[in-house]
Image (cartoon, rainbow, N blue to C red; front, top):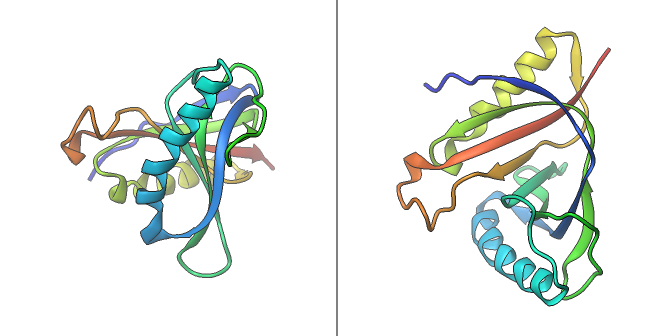
Length: 157
């Protein structure tokens, strides 16, 4: 079992370029693959480039196994909506984060480690977490070598 080192940070709000969809868990991976290329094309057409690695933010829905997924790239300035891609932001404020090493389908314990840390420090989760994909599946075909940062906003009671 992986041990997670928890980092505490205060983040600035980050402009992003994203696409969004409501998806079943089984649909997420294939959807993400298609979205990052589409977003990169819109950014290029607007003379922009990503300012960091791709991310996905997961908002859990009431129906079991469904999520509202916001996927995209951080950017330096807001973009104009085009081709299903629009401007958004990742929230600023206090966050805890950790890095998961391994396949995407084994990342859940990282979320648990962050939630545990927040509760142990008299805090509460403050909104949806997001994953930052530090290694591309294309660059590292071994799923065990994937590195994913998990970022969770929180607040102290």
